[in-house]
Image 1 (cartoon, rainbow, N blue to C red):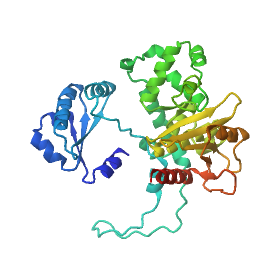
Image 2: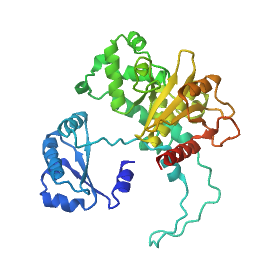
Image 3: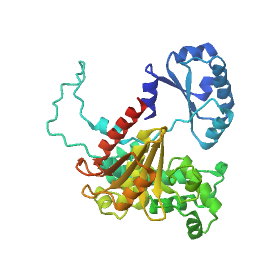
Image 4: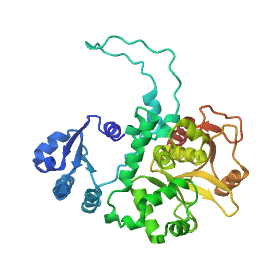
Length: 381
């Protein structure tokens, strides 16, 4: 989460104030507030953007390593104003939903010593705790209100309301209005999650122009609802001329769009394979960080790789996703790996056990994340 990320970067913590409060502070007061802390500025009102910009730019004239600002825009207009006025001195911080490793860590029982408390008596340590399972995170997604809801129905209804509100927002400043049918474009992506996207076909079926579809896709990517994966090699002319794949980034929102409420419905649904791909890809890409470029691989011989990760040193990891631990990759995966000269090949399945006695290791998602992290550390050393 954002707060955890900031605390890791700034061990002395952080202070949150509004944009108007920052504008009223003297420079000496701002310096005193920092003291190794991050200053989180909540941009509640757009009219304070220019004043906040002046404060931030002035701090950059005599930069001090400990003076960092985290600006949080409450609406699209404020975000655009910040982007336009602070070109060259800001970078984006993405706040993803709760991720798999975070959920895993928080689900483990704590066995650390605790100090005395006048309000609590010693608690017995459970001896029959159930094993951690990622299925609830997969079903509900990582948005805290959904994940922590009292039941599956409450979680599902919250996600439906959240999705409807998000898609109904005013995106005219990004060139999208009601005529572009943004909710229908998102539903199309959800219905075809993980499949190569044909913008001409989508435009024809929804009775809008291709340019409209592209604007809607841009908005859906920018607000973090969908992830665009180009064909390998990413950013090449070959890739630009081939159809990309789009995934709904939060699996809980995907399931809200598809009407999947319970674990049983998820396991029985025809979309389970692409749902698992979506969930696993998001976990892996978020864990991989900015130094890795994600893509898919498809060729005219129907060879395919679900996920290709390429780092700065051109090391290439090819990953196949399965919902059955007993199934290995198909011939097309191996031929695709040979074509891209994959340095690492993995199968990531939805189970909890690992099977390394195969030509391609079959790993749980947790094990795959740990392995990919160790590979990245080894290559960076």
